[in-house]
Length: 136
Image 1 (cartoon, rainbow, N blue to C red):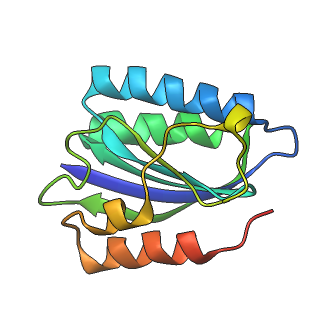
Image 2 (image 1 turned 90 degrees about the vertical axis):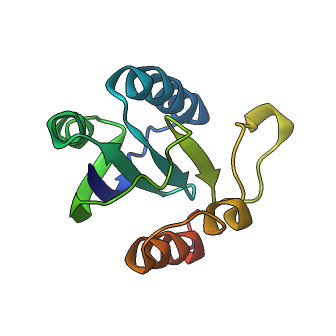
């Protein structure tokens, strides 16, 4: 099993509708490829954990690097992993920007729910640090 974590900035044109599209596409496509993960968004930046076979995760990451909704995409951790952290979910979502309205609401997981999952310390630190970043 392979794990890749990247960060990126949202392009200036990225809207809440784009975020919905990213999630919808991820849930559908990831399920088919048996990829699991977490997407976090703070209004300015994305952080995503992708888990699956390297043959599926690497091409998906390459596709993300070419997606115009992302700029400055950077892999911050990648390599073999013993177990999946997000095994039951094709894509969890955490929006780190608390001022969402009902109109913008996208179902999401909370930080306590994420932190309750079994995961390596380095992954836990990356997730916690990203959650502490101030977006816009």
